[in-house]
Length: 249
Image (cartoon, rainbow, N blue to C red):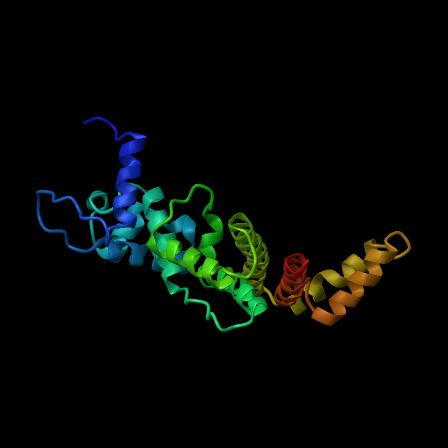
């Protein structure tokens, strides 16, 4: 049997992602023990628990009590499974209320992106580039566009605003996830107790006057190396200020 071509793989992935909308091909053989939805749910649960690096066809099959080779009758590869997983978690997004102020609607776009990444940190290990859209991610994009439709932005500008808000939220979520993982092993206070005195000995304030002054002020305020939540709120506010100022102009 010849290897599937890129076109064959693309066709199969589209059929899987849009399986509720596209009539499925009837194949001969024994009835499947589980559904594609169950396979995706098991993969998402595994990634939430153990991380994306632990997700494999073999591991997901074990979660479902199936033989590894049998899982290929549901999904052809880990790449295809990943696209299904990313689309599945997007189903958690709620529409953004149209009666909210424009600024709040824009803020909700960023907050929803960040919340999803904090709830499913493994998403940060998945490249978003060329990730084929499924129905739930398409629905999210529709909701995001609806939140800023009619406020005076051209179509390309609408897409750009969503991209900028999403990318800012993603960058901040990456820091927040890293902080949460580190804190699970050692609290910020414990870390600083161990490293603070040593750093004070080797970092002379006269050589780094600004870094010493500002770093001390920020460290005293946050009692941590940083404040991802506070940085998100500050950065989002400034982003929205700039977008809305350009729109008003």
